[in-house]
Length: 569
Image 1 (cartoon, rainbow, N blue to C red):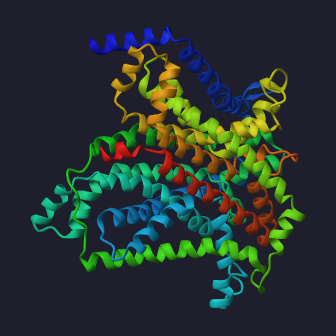
Image 2 (image 1 turned 90 degrees about the vertical axis):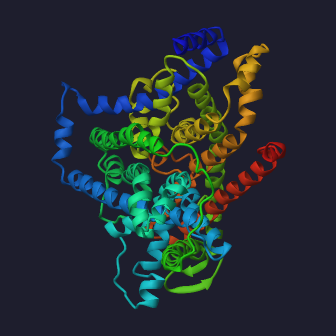
Image 3 (image 1 turned 90 degrees about the horizontal axis):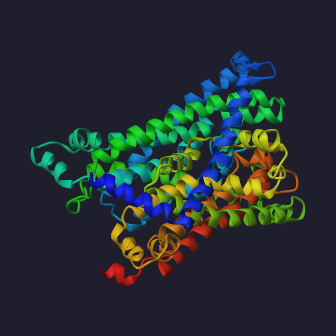
């Protein structure tokens, strides 16, 4: 009864606040127009033919050998990459939380390696694997004397995607492991259980829902990945690359739309299971924080093998990242290792490098603050407000996480070049800079929203209510009370959105027109041609931009983040 009265009071306050009502209406319009509408157009294209509703397009694509092969390849890679990424992520998370490392250098190295792929551009690891283990690779040709080794295909994609996505699992599992009460495991140890028995009978069952959650998130990321299969897949086509080739090679937009719907159905199913089943179980399994500090494992029989295993993976990842700038500095990779700046010079003199960095930087710089602000507004509405369409706003804003980039790209093409808006007030959107900015916003919105929701749930509601009691409207409360309290999340979301935008490829490669030069599109183009020197030069500068942005964010949070008085308190 009290809850019903509180909800009714919240609705009355909302209806009396025109700014809040306007914000909700604008958000619903934005989410409907730029997330739901493109997906709806895909369904229309797939089911509606010139002769009316029909499954003809689906029947046609299911008879295509390329499609059946691509979907089998996609599911096979997704399954194995998810298992491997979850296990490697669990390994790094367990070592960080449970194991006492002998030096701080190792601890720092493992943390850096666990975060490197998160903020790095696409293609980097694919380029490195080709240059290290391909036919002209340093390891294969010069160290092992193998001249006909091919890294293209299933195993190339598997290695690259595992190294790309295991940090996602690491970040999810690290928090779960930290929240396990040490007394549960110590009780098992006191009863004579071995370390392995404690891990399998106590620790693992507690993190199993979280492990399943990490598995599904990685599965979605893997089957939706376009960049790595495009570069290192060779003839091993996945669904994301097949959709792209169906549009750019076969000019079959209806077939591409039907393939996109199949891929979307798979990712949506995984997303619903992950968000509404496993995520809820994971939250229910581990509630609150550990009651006291954990005694770290110092037994060499445990620490030594785990440290060696993490060390081998860490060194391998670091070597792969070092390989890219060297690839841009060597005269001819695999043949002439003379150092030369010619590839960097050619990037700017012959290959529109300046325009590419300018366009990518400006578009991402515009998209990032809009994304961060929208994320915080959506988070605020979801956590702090009670209204009927709240569930719709939360679901649709998070839905973009489950929509593969190629699917979104096809939806935008069909929706804004041949859909309802081919004439009218949005007719000039397709082919413009605005559509690229909108795609950047849509792709980064779920990450910022999740961060904002987590931060806002830690703020006591009474802090904002006191501002309302003093006569402040919702906009003033959000601007002067809420936003300053979550400025760390806002700054983090700002830089995350910028990094994700400037390194985006899967959605925008179908939407970018010749008037724009984007860095990731240039890297893709030269990597496909085998011009690895130019591709590495573009990638090296892009890596410098992304890591520079992260460093600036850390400095900003350090100087403008949480007050020192709050920290002392």
